[in-house]
Length: 178
Image 1 (tube, rainbow, N blue to C red):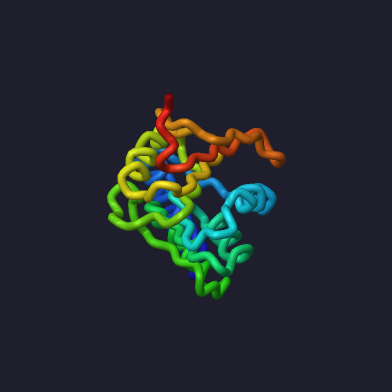
Image 2: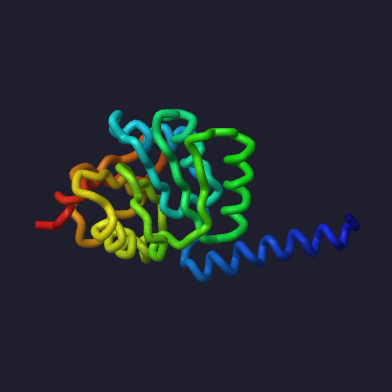
């Protein structure tokens, strides 16, 4: 590849990231290992399936799959560049309990499992709540980093040890604000 080819390739990648960040109203943010470990600590021991809505670069889904080989982990990401990178990372990690899907969690018609984790822009948290109220079974756990789900009542609101964010913990079926 020539220098110009590399610059064009990098330009296309950056443009795709920017276009999807504007379209989705969210910039894919990495999850540091310490923050992932805090989130993983709130996943119940009897969990069978975890879905990461807006899995971005795949950091959190990868950490969950590593820490919990007994759990099926699915990352859902719509933005093509973070999805491609997370997919490659998943293949390289060779975790049979991990899968990444390129899709919009709002239109993907599938059971999200026992636990849903997310770190999404506050402007789309209402969509998260709507989707989960419709598709998640009673008793399911939602762990949202940074932003509350509007109209939902958290059973836990915990300041994170590794930064300014909070974790909002919800139990589907008991999430209605009173």
